[in-house]
Structures are given as C-alpha cells and as structure tokens.
Amino acid sequence: MTYLFISDLHLSPEHPRLIRGFLDLLQHYQHKNTHLYILGDWFNAWIGDDYTAPWLDEIVEALKKFDAAGNRIYFQVGNRDFALGQDFLEQFHGILLPEIYTMEIAGRHYRLEHGDALCTDDIAYQRFKKIIRNPYLVAFLKKTPLSFRQKLANGFRKKSREDKHQKSYEIMDVNHQAVIKALEHMDYLIHGHTHRPAIHHEQNKLRIVLGDWREQSSEAMILEVDEHGQQQFIKWQIA
Image 1 (cartoon, helix red, strand yellow):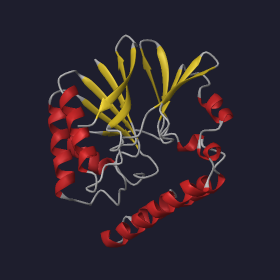
Image 2: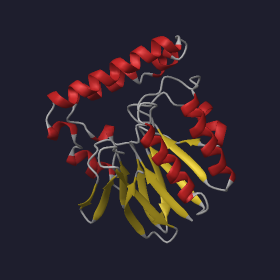
Image 3: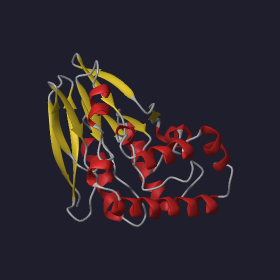
C-alpha cells in the first residue's frame, strides 16, 4: 500500500500542463494500491459542485479509473477550493476529510491539514477566512448564479496576488507556536499552503511541507509513505 500526499496543484483550464501533470500522476500510481490525499488548493478556484466543463470532465474520468483500479481518493479543502463538497467527490467515490485529520501509519501518528490555519500571524487573512468560510454565507453563495460566483472567485484571486506583494515573508509563513501545538500528541505534521516545500525538525518531530505545482520549474514536491512508514519526499516532474 502507498500513501501519497499532494497539495496546491491550483488546477485550471488556463494551465493545461498542470492538469496533464496530475493525470500523469494518477496513471503512475494507478496500480500501486494508492491512498491519495489531496491537502487543499487542488483547484485554483472552485465556484461550486454544480460547475461543469470539458477540462474538469477529463479529470473526473481519470479519477473514476483510478478508483476502479482499487485506489482511494481523500480531499481536504484549501483557501482556494473551500466550497468543494462531497457532491463532486461522489462521482469517483472520493471522501471529504475534515480540515484537520489525524491518521496512523505503522504505529506513527500523522496530522494532515491545508496549512493556512497555521499562519496565525496573518491576522487580516484569518479575519477574512472566518467571514468567507461562514457556513451560512457559503450556503447562500451556492444558490447564486455561476456567473456571479465566477466573478467573485476572480476577485478573490486578484486580492490574493495583491496581498502577497504587500505582506512580508514571515507574516505569510506558519507561526512556530501554532506548529508546536499542532504537533502535540503527533509524530508528523503534513501540510501545504505556504509554497515552501521542506522537511522541518520540530522537537524530535517532523513537519513536512508539500510543494505547490509550478509550470516554470516543471516540478512539485510530493510525499510518499509506504505501509511500513518509510517516507520519500519526491520531486514529481511535470511533463
């Protein structure tokens, strides 16, 4: 059995190479009894499970084949695709995980999350997140026309780009105390969001930061763990 952890693919029709890279990943791991964990920002934006498009249909069909081969797909929401729900995942028997999920592999305890909740120094973002992720607001937005939601998503992406230019490196990274708290009773913390792939040693424990998928460098850092707990931090090449 292979446990595969990826994050921050930011798939969209504007970046077909990233889509192809994901489809290649599914094909590569299709016959390896893989449990695939996608830790948020799978898509560059998600305007609702009622959205359909040919590029998305291709992904769904590949995931159906991946599932039919005996593999499993798990997903945690990120800041870009927090509106993605079980209705979409149901098409290929995917499972929506809570925003914080713990699991055990070979007797070791893992905590999975997207990673944005760890960036507690970014007060403006945390305030915005609390508002936009309000369940009542999300339920209301799902009832609005797709065209309105698309404009809203475009606005969020523009704001995110502007924020990155205005905020310091430190503010947008994880808070050390938040990390220590997250690792309490855990052996490993796996997350994405910061786009700074690395393995950090935190008081004899490990924090593994998954990489974002990049067209410029044609690579992404992903994590593979076998059933015995052996880990490989892999540089996945995007063709």
